[in-house]
Length: 426
Ligand code: NAD
Image (cartoon, rainbow, N blue to C red):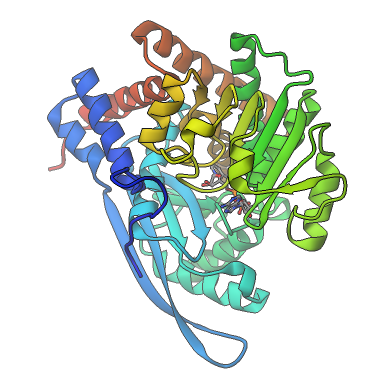
């Protein structure tokens, strides 16, 4: 299946993520009177590659998988974005994720465009050998369009530093020499950057801390619920706990856990590593994902997949502040309900930008073959995130719009200015 409409949300609700991005781009371009030639270019992806490729499975059979690599824009620099391995991926989701990357890299003002890749597969049901075969073949299929100067993949849902190492090796074998800059999120021993693994969660924590200060929420003792306990969710939880927050609930695809006195995040992490899920952790009661999203708390961090907060459940959200760790966790209709209910949202294109910022640092370090200490990485990340937060916040106050609209305005102005400066070839 290459294309399908998301089925969550209420009837008539926009749950196709690419349509949601296009709506947001239209509204921003109209509000800012962006020229039609830039607006029309921003509404579409520059390149969409679909590949169907065979992989030898452990049982001797051959399976054909479908993968995508979409480049939304390379106006401000090479296209940049992760690769997702998940059974439900489809083209419009990948297009939306690519477009969000273009906007995100412009919000934090790093010299990249936006891209995304995906393979429809279930990595949890595959052996390491099968996963390596799938990754190496997919990397070969998309070699046509990736490269350190053109499009640089990174990890996303279902992929890891190990997967990035296989892609780097496959690309390098085909070129005949080692190419560090072709992917980011690599293992440290292969030119990965210190601090990259934690970067997205760290960025969520930094933006949450800055927003909490503006809203007068004291992080010491503030209650937090986190949906999705993978890379982004678990690190956000860990770093917010370090700031003094009480993490009362977390969830993964198998369910959620609650302890109003606070969960020990490190112990939950070890438990998940051992058992594959957070469910069943001692000193906690099991809750559903829907119950987690509706918990009374100061901060809610949706860090799983798109559209988890839709018109169907937005009214039940009681958190004061929502930090979008995931890409596109809130549908446009849900966004309106949350704003009408006085909820404060730090949008994905700002909140989770820490990952691509440190990916940029990794790429720069690889190109220069000169590596930074973890303190240097974290302090540069803090600077970039703080600048972006201030710029978005200032735009929001000046234009009297929420943070999401302000972030889109800031980004689209930067991209449109770059398009105008470059002109149209030929
Ligand atoms: P991951 O695979 O490490 O973790 C995803 C987590 O979500 C897993 O724990 C999974 O069990 C859980 N999950 C899936 N469906 C769920 C459901 N219905 N309810 C509750 N939990 C569910 O992926 P990740 O890298 O942490 O990415 C999570 C989100 O953050 C995605 O939207 C991704 O695009 C976005 N993001 C990731 C990065 C990054 O650097 N990894 C950067 C920016 C944005």
